[in-house]
Length: 304
Image 1 (cartoon, helix red, strand yellow):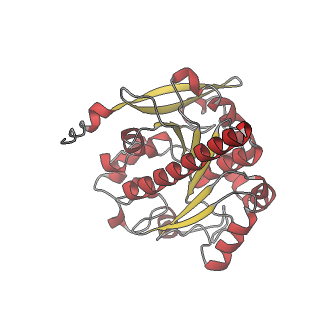
Image 2 (image 1 turned 90 degrees about the vertical axis):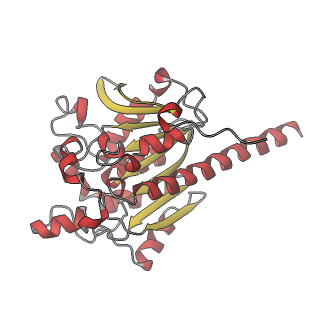
Image 3 (image 1 turned 60 degrees about the vertical axis):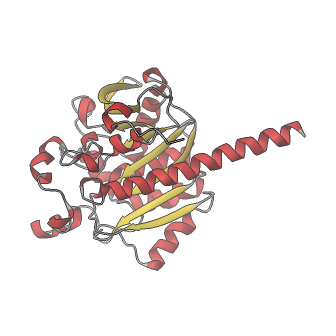
C-alpha cells in the first residue's frame, strides 16, 4: 500500500495565535501553535533572551526559521512566552524581574496552559540566552508539573564578557550576531517585530548568574541539553569550562552539550535555526520516551 502524502504544513498546524496567561495577577502574552486535528504529543514552552520577544521563535525573516511551525508540524503544541517585563506585562513590570521572580511568575503562568487545550504528555522547556536562567531555576525548584526535559541555547555558566562590561559597537555585534552570512535576507529589517527594550532588573541580575547557577544546578533532576553556536562569544565553551558545567548538574539523569555549526548567538533567527530546532525536538522525543519507559517500568513493578 502506498503511503498517503503528507498534508501541506498549513493543514497540519493550527496557529500561531496570540494568547494570554495569568500569573498571580500578572498577564503574560504568548504565541501558540498546535498540530491540527490530533492531540499534541507534549507541549514545548519557549523562552526568549534579553531584548527579544516571543516573535524570536516565529520565523520573522523566513518561515524555515520558525520553531512554532516545525514543532507543531511534528505533533507538539508549542507556546512561545513573552517573559515578565516584555509584551503584555511590560507596563505592569517596567523594570522587569530577576531570575528567581521570573521563574515563579512563569511557573504560575504555565499552570494555566490546560485552559488553552490539551498539553499532551507534559512540558518541555526550550530556552534561549537569558531565558535559560529562569528555565533552569524552574527545573531546579520542581516548579513545573509534568516537566520532562530542558533544552538551552546561548547560555552557559561562565562568561567570556561579563554583563555590563563596556564593548564597542563592533564588539556588541559579534557578541549577539556574528557574521551576516548566517542570517536570511531581511532579518534585520524584520527585527523590529522581534526586539524589545531590556528591563533593567534582569540586566542587573545577569551578573549574578555564575553564583546562582552553582547554587541551583545540583537540584536539576530532568535531562538537560545545552547548545553553543559556532560563533558564540558570550560564554566560555572550552573543554574545562564545559566539564565544570556538566559536573555541576550531577543530579540530572542526562546532560548533553552540543555545538551548532554556522550559527551565531541568536541561533533561532539564522539559517541554522531549522537544524537546531530539529535537534532540540529530537532531544525532546528522547526525553519523552525516557519518561514513558519509566512509567511503564513503574507500572510493571507495581503489579509484581
